[in-house]
Image (tube, rainbow, N blue to C red; front, top):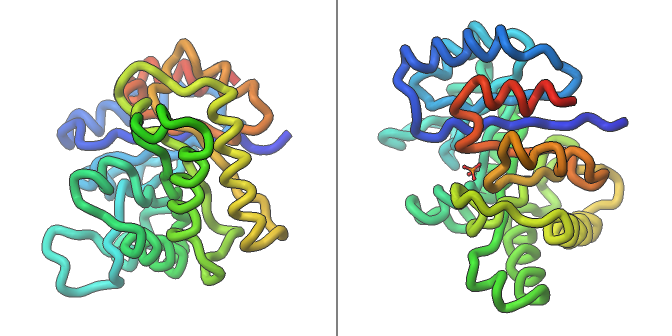
Length: 243
Ligand code: PGA
């Protein structure tokens, strides 16, 4: 059986002290380490997490598109390459509120890989596109993939998360049928670049203690990206320990 990935995106939540308690409590509660569990805390706790990460892996929620220098407020992959295993790239909240375009996202993927940090590329359509039907969704997702990933991209060292914008933080997750359809779109795009590698494809958007089991059962979904439900260590540990 291939590895299942559980990613916890804590976003802009928890003070440093709260993060310390959270990691302590999660470490005590998790008993199943068969899956790859990747925590994405706020940057203020990144260094603490890296020293106390135990059997979890560590990720950063965003990276700058450059390698160092004039980027006030930004963090470069070169600064965290010894701390982090993964990075989230192109999350819809970054695309929306920080106006990240496809070119920036593609550069972030390359710089992350160059620093041995595996990027998790987030893609996903808005509600308008979803309501227009499958062929519009296909165009939207293919465009995001094709602009972010090029022949330069190392497909052995990347994951893709399908995160429809309308499902993020809304309590309304996508159906397994919808997700599997989009996974096929993503696979078709990747196969045009190279047939050689298998890229893990995850789902994110209102994953909870109640629905996580469903996603695990689908053979096509390689993992889940959990936002709101990951903020409570008790709930996240239940999602993890299920397996
Ligand atoms: P959510 O967030 O689980 O709160 O919907 C997921 C995400 O944005 O990564």
